[in-house]
Image (cartoon, rainbow, N blue to C red):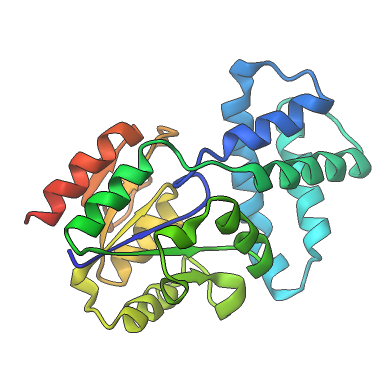
Length: 234
């Protein structure tokens, strides 16, 4: 392993926490329901991601859709206006992000072992850039190793975004390892590009039938460093 590349959302930080604070500010949703609601929100976001990326749907319309549909799945009927208000609160909360506490030790290990670090993330360029700035990612990861789909015009699950990253770092696919939480976008696409993959399955999702499987599956971030060390020592 010569490079370790990370997904951003719900991998380097817990994306449920800013979502939870936004929803519970306006709706009486119990804590025990929040994780399932958040997963539904992510699924509905995936449904409209491509349409929003190509301009077929406005970004605002996609935000309303994913919030309304997720809440409707759990019996909460909200107006477009309230859905957008919750979305804006969620976005404001994303400007106050903190890295998951296990991540700095992983970055330090990679520096010590001279393993290059990078990020591949889907989303609008400036929106994702604000998250990276809130997390102070430039302390660890260079700009040329940070790939945002909205900037480069390629998005996961296309393997082309992984090919672009390997080309930028001037490394072979077999020297690359990706860490992400989404099976289709992260595991399938990275394995299709010839990379090693660690699936951070901290939401404990069921793996779909697929010819592609992760090289390692981690359900707790506390175990991530040990798995990385094992893969790096191969």
